[in-house]
Every structure is written in structure tokens, then in C-alpha cells.
Length: 64
Image (cartoon, rainbow, N blue to C red; front, top):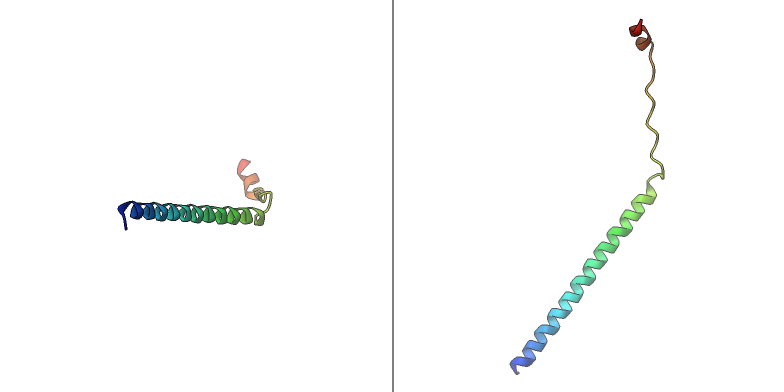
């Protein structure tokens, strides 16, 4: 076969591998995006409020 034909086959293979790589990358990013969306919906919309510090009788006795 002529060198031009081999070159054309090489280009076609390279393009095919490039397209498959892009599809795999998009698929990976899409799955990661869906996973993050599921994690975001699994968490409560508002974070729980921080507990307020309890006042003890020791604090009152220290001030006197």
C-alpha cells in the first residue's frame, strides 16, 4: 500500500482515539457532577444551628 494510504489510516485512527478520549472525559465529568448534585440534595438545606453556650453557676460566682 502507498505511504499516503498509511498516513490517512494513521490520521483516522488518531482522530478516533481523540474522539473516544473526549467522550470518556465528558462522561467522567458528567458522572462527577451528578454525584455532587446528589450529595448536595442529601445534605440539609440549612446547616444546624450552633449550640448556644450554657451558663453555669460558676460564671456567676466568679464575677462577685
